[in-house]
Image (cartoon, rainbow, N blue to C red; front, side, top):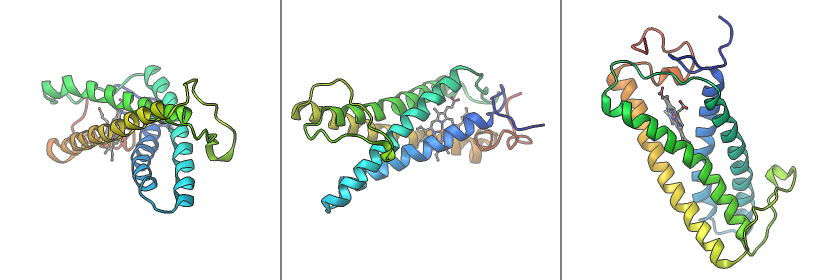
Length: 195
Ligand code: HEM
């Protein structure tokens, strides 16, 4: 069989897998970078780190739009038949919430720099100038978006932690292929999976 790009009802394809892991790394990496840049003492380093955080944030937003289009345009693998009713009900909600955070976090960051009275232009990886969102600039609005961005970041990480715990439970406790099928399309064969 050739390279499987799209999902089937029993496994993820490379398109969804690559987007999942690149976005997961960016999502967690942005959280770490966000904490680091607001704690360094050197103004110069803080400035550089913030520019990097903005660049990766715009990249993340672009990839998330692609990911949502990819998801809506294809099928999603079913949960293994032995999955309990509670998880059958909550897993789609958790995934939907994760998508919401993936959109809301970069957007709130974009709103924050757009409302900032410092008016520092955003240049993703120094390539071009990203226009600001049409929001009024004021210290009040900037403060609001900063709070929103930071609460969303903590809540997003808590949800991601729950998601990782669920994935590990499938792998180590239930012994099914739910984690493996997000690593390679054919990896899940031989373990209990979707029929
Ligand atoms: C080490 C970290 C992570 C692990 C081990 C992991 C594991 C998984 C696994 C096993 C699935 C497949 C679930 C299924 O087969 O039904 C999945 C799906 C998903 N993951 Fe993760 N994940 C991680 C990080 C993240 C992060 C940080 C995000 C959000 C930014 C995320 C968002 C999603 C979403 C939205 C889906 C649903 C995909 C779909 O069917 O549309 N994951 N993840």
